[in-house]
Image (cartoon, rainbow, N blue to C red):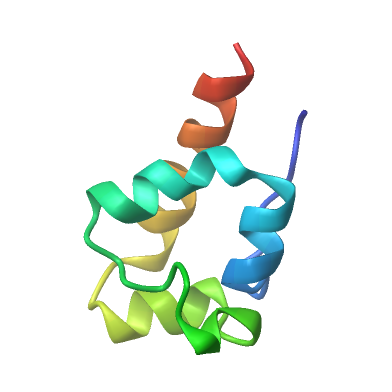
Length: 70
């Protein structure tokens, strides 16, 4: 499934559509998965909260999604 990731997608929306991204969240130590805020925290929020570079986070998520699709 080809997808264009948006920085304003929520963690829940991302994982609902691309559950293969879960492993990346776990590997990065992001505690977003299962957090009550996952329904409204966006990837921008995640990057800000964990002091990550947003574009790199988006690239990593996109790669995880593409790798799983192959």
